[in-house]
Length: 200
Image 1 (cartoon, rainbow, N blue to C red):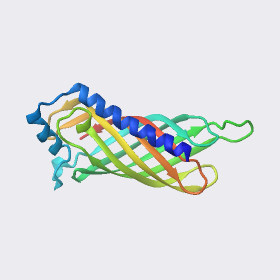
Image 2: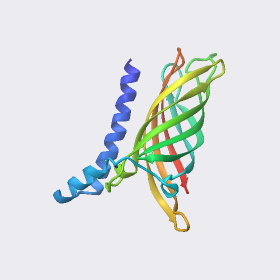
Image 3: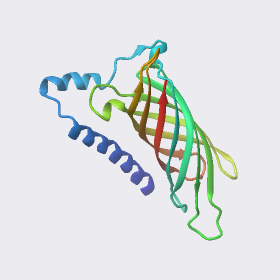
Image 4: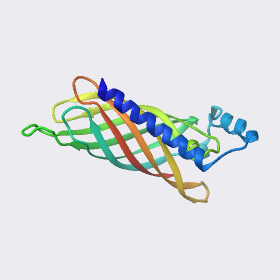
């Protein structure tokens, strides 16, 4: 329970840091505040081909499982799109390995496949307008068995390069944090990864 509370606190801190960074980078006037707050939550609407925002990505970072395992590396790849504004759908495959803290005990090795649904924020406030929250779920496979995983997700993607053509394409860099809750007695864990995405 202490581990869970600590991890949830970390997720809260990540969201708070994003908010503080956004506030320091941009200070709207009173007349702009109402407009920004209303557009932070986009009006749900259908999208056409140019609004689907498909993307592919690679990700790498750290996985910190609870229990008797050290923090270790995690990496993966995935894809996604926006079928209905402001909701996104995607899938990712992740691999991680965490060394045991006890001599003679084998390491924790996992391959995880997650389907994820996200709510994408809007508006014009830096960081927040490129942020999302969501939920991911799917199987996670270790050396012994396959378990079911459920993970709340929070993150952001900052555009760094755009190209104009028949369709607008871009590259973003961002951060993705999730707390993976695993069925049975397998270790839950906090995952924090950087992500490089190509949107087309």
